[in-house]
Structures are given as C-alpha cells and as structure tokens.
Length: 341
Length: 195
Ligand code: SF4
Image (cartoon, rainbow over all chains, first blue to last red; front, side, top):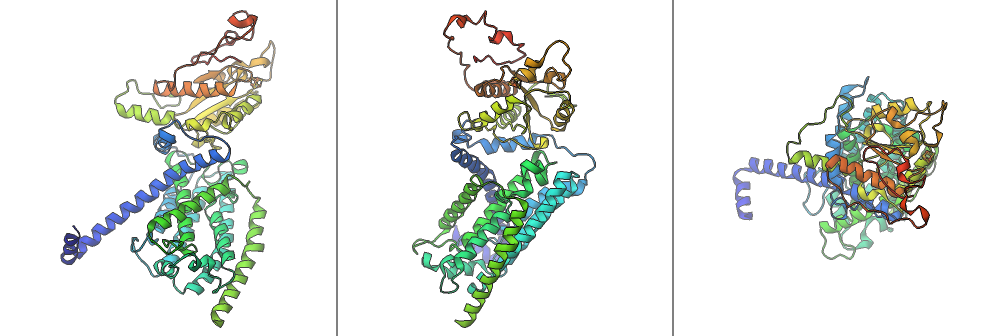
C-alpha cells in the first residue's frame, strides 16, 4: 500500500496533492463537527455533575444521542427571516463564524507531520483567522435589527479589542524566547520532559507561568466563555448577538463557540504545554496533545459552571488595568533577559 | 403544532418522519420565563432533585427564536397577555405549549364572577398542547407533562404510566374530596397526579 502510494506520488504528484487536500478537508470537517457536537454533550454532563444532577441520560446510552437529536431538531426547525433585517449579512454571519473556526485548524499540527498545511507563519495565520470570528458576531448582531443584539455587538468588539492586546503581547514575549512562528518548531523545542515546556522555562524568563495565566484568561475572554460571556448575557441581553437567530443559524453560532474553544485550548497546549510531547519524555504522540487539549477544555467548562458573570466594567478594568500592564512588564523583562543571555 | 400556516402531514410517509419526530421529542428546549408561583416549581424541576436535563429539556433558551416549548407557568393577567401572545408568535414552528398550573388552564383561584384582571387560561390566547393541573403542580407532574408531550409528538410513550398508590384516610377513594383531580377541568392529555 505504502509503496503504491510512493509510486503514485512519483508519477502523478498533482493527483496526490488533490487527494491529500480532500483527505485533509474531510478530516478537519469531521474533527470540528464531532468536537462541537460532543463538547456540548460533555458540557451538559459536567454542568449536571457540578450542580449535583445527572445530566442528559435518557436519549441513547449516557445521553450520547442527545447532540444528534438536537442537531436534527435544529435543522428541521422553521428557517425564519425576521422583518427588516439585512438578509445577506444575516445569512452570512453564522457561516463566517464557523468558516474561520475551520480555517484555524489548517495550520494547527496535531503531531509530527499531522498538519494540513505547514506554514512558517502558522501562529500568525491562526490569530488572523481567530479575529475574523469577532466580525462574524458583529455582523450577525448588526444585521438582525434588534436592540439587544446591537448592545451585544458593541460589547463583543470592545471586549475582543481589550483582550487581543494582552494576548498578543504575551505571545510576542513567548516568540522572543522560541525565535520562530512555526508551530512544529515551537513544539520541537519543548521536547524531553515537562521541565522543558514553555510554561516552566524559567531560565529564559521568570515570568513564563504568568504569561501562561494571562494567555489562558485571554482565551476565555476571546471565546466568550463565562465569566466573560458578556456578549451573550442572558440576564441582560436576551441571547446577545444571536437573539434573532433560530434553527441552524443559531446552531452554527453555537458550534462556532465550541470550535473556537478547541482552537484556543490547542494553541495553549502547543505554545505552553509542550504540544504532543510526553511530560516525562517517553512515547510522544498525538494522544498527549489530545489529553492536554481535553483537560484544558474541561477546565474551561469547570470555570464556566463555577463562577458568575462579571460586570462589563470589571471585564474591561481587568484587561486595561491589570493584564496589559503585566503583559508589558513581562515583555520588557523577557526582552532584557534574551538580550543579556 | 400546525397553527400558523404550516400544515401537519395527513399521513406519516416513511421512517424518516418517525426519526425526525423522535429527534424533536427528545430535544424540547423551553423558553425562559415564568409568570407567577408555578414558575418556582418549574425552576425546581430543572434543579438537582428532579433534573429535567435527563430528557434533554434543560436548555432554557432566553430567545423565543430558539425555543420549541412554551411553558406557561402561572397567572396570565390582562396586562401581560399581549406580551405572551407576542412571544408565542415569535417562536418558529414547530412549537408546543404546556399550560402549567390551574391559572394557566382556567384562571385557577383568581377566577370568580366579575373578575377583571386576568385571562382565564392560556387556551384563550393560543392553542395549548398539554395541561398540567395543580396549584402548583409538583415537579413530577411537569416531568409527566413533558412525557405526555413527547407521546403526543412521537405517538409512543417513554415509560409505562405509574398509578399512584391510594391515599390513606377517609378521602382514599378521591370521589368526595374537593381537591381530587376530578375537580379540575382536565383537558386533552391532562395528567393525573396525586398532590
Ligand atoms: S396555579 Fe396556583 S401556584 Fe400556579 S400560578 Fe396559579 S395561584 Fe400560583
């Protein structure tokens, strides 16, 4: 089989390239779709456990068919276009949110060579796509001609601007240490054991754990998760940006949120937690990345069901008065240390 | 269902319809709103002791565009009625309505000669699928109502009906007791639950 593939590769490189493309697209679609569906199930189960309930259990074994039922129901619901909306933008916005989430996975490596397209500027590409996600929420909220959505869209933008800055400052300090934007190389540098992970690289910069914390908090805020889910504050704004969305439009927004959570957690585990390296330097492989990824996602859910929502001033104050100064100091110290040693 | 221009099919054509119905019945997302004391009981049904989440019905959506089920939990006064009517109209098809408590069924304790404040039952505003008697009904009764609704959607019942054991005391037969379920104006598919 392998020799046959090699033979094909030699004779018809174009065909192989197309085949590879198709396989990559199918894998990414399946991965993101399955994750978005079953992370909702996991979240409902975890929420149940945290509140001393059982969670979904009657629909299929352990409620495992619940995402399927929800999906079919959302698709069979009436596709409703409210009066006075901007039709094109209203229909485009959910797709934009989902597409950018898909695009982020193009450059994310899940293991040695397990990547759709390796880019030298991979990290930059991910941040670029992730910030278009905000545009999707903004367009959807703006196009649906609803006052709650408008308030929410203003919040989404100011929140994301506020948290993009400390996030990128922290990443800049990290890049000074790693010296590359290629995610493969970043992981390769952290091989060997957990003391080589970026989060514990104290010889490069003593503030690395702080950088990790800032990045984690910013990821929470960027993916609009509680305690920073002011874009979808049910108690004040009905359903925030997607108040006017029903059926699968809402479903896409919902799935986009979970897909972005996966992107954020994968980035954290690649940048700070050694990617697919084992903590003890044995048997590195994609399974370690998935372990770290799902542990992080469970932590995010745990935070969601434990803490109440902050106020909007609290949110902005945290970013502008606490996170950005610390990130700047972190940047300065890291730069100085890199220069000196 | 089939109230606002969307007609229900006369015949179930294939197995596909059944699968769709099954999916709809197992993912009834209620709308987040309560009108009076009965809504406290509805919140209790979502909490740990009764846990609506078991049937996939705990996703209380704040926006009517995303919800399938309207639980009218409490007294509908005349001032509130237009708002509730709007919310009902804003829900996309297919949608269902559950009237929880005597107030939502018929006006309950506030119905008397010459009253001017309340709407006597949700049925005066829009079609109601399942009614749940009680003042307030117990959380188990709401769960039973949801199962009745599932039965109405799919045509099959999830579990066999449980007949409550006879009550101790002189009112055991329940015939002469003014609080017995027979005293309630029970509608189609009403639930019989002991208080
Ligand atoms: S039926 Fe009874 S408990 Fe329910 S809203 Fe009316 S008065 Fe309150």
